[in-house]
Amino acid sequence: MGGPGSSIPVAFTIPCDARETDARNPSDEIFWKLTASAALGGLDFKAAFRIPVFKTESSDASLTTAKLNERSEAVGVLNRSLHIRSSCLGFSRSRIVDAAAIRRFELYPGMRSADRIWFDLKIHIEGGGTITAASAMDKGEAEWFVGELKKDLGMQTRDATS
Image (tube, rainbow, N blue to C red; front, side):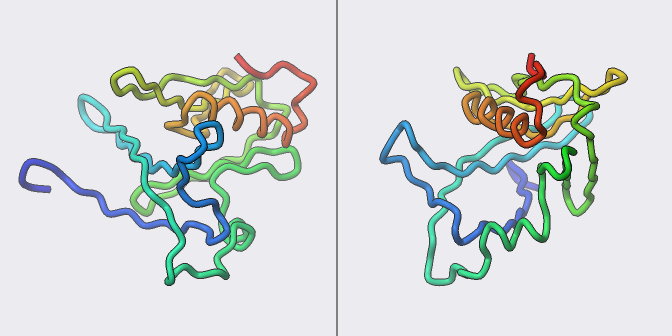
């Protein structure tokens, strides 16, 4: 804090076998996005940043996607249950939602910048509650993600989207 702005340090591990940033083919563009949000008095804070990701000499080849998934999953499916883990500033929360309890998925416009919209994925569960499972996704990315979740949860045959 101080001066005309603020800073928030972040740290995360990117798998060595993940695809690098690549904008050469617009129909198969690879970009990495960092999102940050905080509930504040008055207006809440939410921002998304595109960050360049490339392999370097110091990249650790042993940190593969499979190895990192063994440690932690943010949103994943196991035994027809959706596992959602969120964390902020060292505090984390985990939720497990059985596929049978999911009533529908909703793509909610969560953030705008000029003519661009980023969507949050809200999951409506039995009893009327909602859970935000992912944030700040492009519409195509969000629709793909919902489709993959539905397949993994075995929900292709029942209508669970809004």
